[in-house]
Length: 289
Image 1: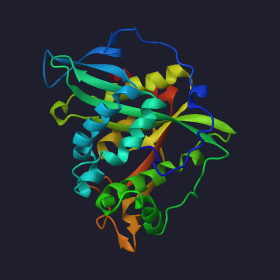
Image 2 (image 1 turned 180 degrees about the horizontal axis):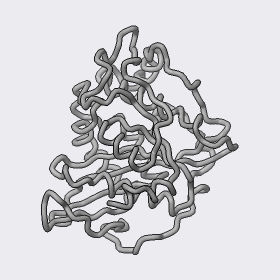
Image 3 (image 1 turned 135 degrees about the horizontal axis):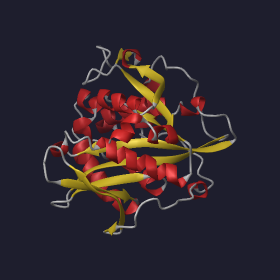
């Protein structure tokens, strides 16, 4: 997810880094550009979904969908028994849809939204705050500061966001050392459980990466793989793990947050993944989808 607690340098419009081309046919639906008219559903023979380019007009649609479905498939949410995880992510959606590359999928049969993938364009420069490349002995002070605007009812959601954001803030350590650069942050993905088994993450991510690559706005793509299944997929798409926080090392106010050292799905860390957009597009798994 976007490091929602990081103050980024936005003095210069991100659009100055964004020179879009149009690599796709200009089919439009409800004002959106259709990227994939028909993606067949393995679980529902004869039916398909379409993938469209999303923008800021889709903010409420994506926010509501995320609030309903995201927590059901996010292992850290399941570990803490978080039922709804949308409010904390709203700023992520807004940033990504204004300054990034995002896709949204609809069922061609009933026109219902079935999933999305959002990514944001971020600027790394001399004003970017870069924490030391180390794991805090205790996340308590960071968490206490982050939760102030939210209140105790958001304890678990803010704890998850604190951990993931901390990992993502390490990305400048692994990028080329230049004065200023843009990088694409693979942020959030969610699919309606009724459409599981169709590998929708694959085409949603591919189209997002294609949009970013064709724009020539950035060369690198990064993100966290908080689920075991997404880690496997991202690893196969040549995104490499460059750093991580083992869950067994996470402490909050002196107590271990994950006594068993793993999340709901057995994943034992929060890894930071990085690759070039070009390498991802030419990876074997992308070619197979």
